[in-house]
Each structure stands twice: as structure tokens, then as C-alpha cells.
Length: 346
Image (cartoon, rainbow, N blue to C red; front, side, top):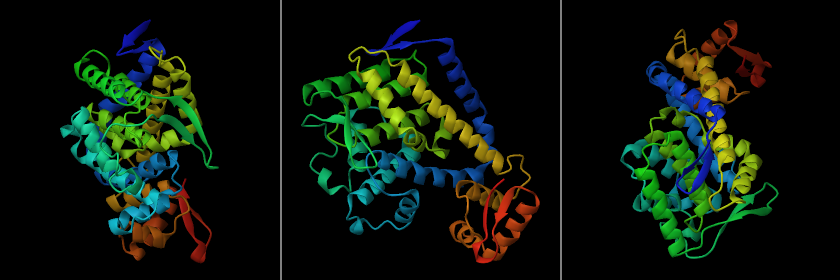
């Protein structure tokens, strides 16, 4: 059965409906998990933030690794943000932080989105002339590849009144539509925002931030403990292919392919989150320190005791004792010996 939502067409079928139900069933149990796993979730959120910032900026051409992003975010010195990659990383981090802390107070309207864009571009020297304002020149969605090449994915809405009208229509639809499922609305809003490409630059990054914002506002709080951006980065070619495929039939296109991609990304990161929580001993048999160390090893395979002690601020003798215990309980694997000893999850 095909339906029209906003200006887009969507073919609702049992497979799509079942996926929505699966995501919602997970969400229904999340409140209980959140209460039980406080310490583990705190660490997962920190890791997810680094991965999200790194992945989303790399999709747009940044060369910084997650390790480099983490070092930068721990020692932010705005006066020393001289290269564009660092400027974009800090801008993304600060925007994501505001969304995480204040998502309930952020309205989905022109003023709020312009403010988020202004924060996102705050440190980018070459973007000062257009930050927080709709585009003044035509732009296009481009794919940035590791070898430095670019490819135009699709053309976007013309600047001026066409962009202004399209965004106003998008805000009006999102606010007034009380029937469409929140997950579908989030997927559609993200797609249409990228299709319009309302700002001169930063649209891809902001679209992924907005996806997180909309999911949080609709009650999917688990999204802040995993990285949707990292999932998209790992499927970057598919991401661009799906966008191009849907856009080729614009206007009034059927966007089933995009919705299926968006939902499969959410399903994958839900499963990743549960695997991580299970590896930390969700049954409650581990102490908070044991859980935090197990979670850390799960995210940083090959880490050493000194690194764990430094990153988690736990005395090294305590870390070594816990590592020995976790090895004996067959929760982690010890590799090597002496100074080369490192650990990974079973």
C-alpha cells in the first residue's frame, strides 16, 4: 500500500511495519536497562560521542582518526584550532553536546536549526560568512572519497525563496503530522533536509545531528549510547547510492529504499548496543569497575593495562588485579607477555 507523507511517497508493507515493531520493542525495555547499567552507559556514551564526531566529519572529508578526535576533545584549546579538520570536529562535538543535554528544549523550526548550524560552523574560519544563514549560492550533494576525489550525488533546492519555502513546508509538515510513526517522520525529515540542502555547507553533518535530535525527542534515548554516524560511515557507499537512487525520481519520489536503509542502520546499532551491554555482565555479577574495564576492552581491543588505568582513572595495580580475574573467568583473552601484554573480549 503506497501512502503520501509530506511530498514523498512511501510503500508500507509488512516487512517495514515489522522492523518498526522490532525497534519499538527494544525501546520499550530500554528504561529498565538504563536503570541497571548506569556506569557502563556513561562510558558507552563517551565512546559513542567520539565515534560519532569522528565518523560524521570523516564522511565529509576529514582525515582525523577516532584516536586523534579523542585526544583533541580532551584538550580543546580554541585558540589552537588552526586546521579545518580540528575546527569541524570541535564544532560537531559542541553541537552534539547541546543536543544531548537540551534536546527536549530544541524546537524543530527555522530559528533552532539556524542556531545549531551556527554552533556547528562556529570554529570553521572559511564558513564564518554563511554560518547560521540559509545558502546564497547553489550547492549540490557531493560524496568525498578517501583518495580525495568527489562525485556529485544530486542537485539540491535553489537558493533564495525556493529553499525558504521548502524548509517552511518541511517544518509545517513535521509539526502538524500526528499520524505518521515517529521513526518514519525522523527518516523522512533527515532525507528531505539533505535533499533541500538549505545551508551553504555543513548540511550532511547537520542532517545526522538532526536524526539524533529527532530520535531523542521521540523517546529513543538509547541512540546516545551508540553511533548512528559510525554505522553510516561503515556503509558510506550504500548511503550515497540510496540517496542518489531516491533523488533520481524527484519530485514526489518513493523513498522506501531510504527508509529501509535508515531503519536497518538503527537495527544494527541496537544489536551492537545489546552485545556491548551483555559483554559488561548485564546480569549484574560484575562490580562497576569490572564493568567499565570490560566495556573499555570491548571497544579498544588490544589495549594494555597502563592504557586502561590512565583512561579510566583507576590505579594500575587494581586494573592488573581485575584483568587477571576477568581472564580467569573467561570474559577476556590475554595476548602476549611482559610489556607487550594486551587484552581483548572473548
